[in-house]
Length: 229
Image (cartoon, rainbow, N blue to C red; front, side, top):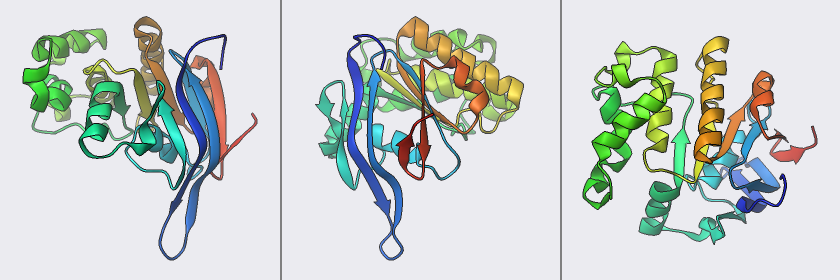
């Protein structure tokens, strides 16, 4: 972790075991620190624990053992409404499969995470969604459905959606996995640019070693454990 920057993410002995009969240890005692504003890439082969690590940091899953802190808050203890509020206020997720709603336009997909909380927003949600589509270069595609967009365009919509709540952290799980190499490189460059301009702490999981040059730092997972590069 570079310099004297504040720690945004800390994991302590983070462990995740799946299964009731045959036990699968997805993560084993992972200790990791990520600085505020850092762009961290987590590499490793399929099954190494990358997605599990992101899911535990983002509170989409609960650890079997160990703890997770985000901005000084121990999030591994949150439950119920506190957990939902934490995700909505602090985390932006980007997935390999885009996860766009096919009957919603690009604009509506960007707005979607905050639509149930629209009255609580201190900003115009539609205006923010338009602004973010402009940021990712899709302002002219705002009213197109996902099926009318290319894979790269759909992932740009997903990036805009991840930013709509102005998160402290963006967690990107194999965001280039369904894209060709050129489009994938463009998406990673876009995430890097947004990380620098908006100072959003970014953790990107990938098996593609060719994008490592975009990172401030690269860590590697193997069989659920952090290993030296």
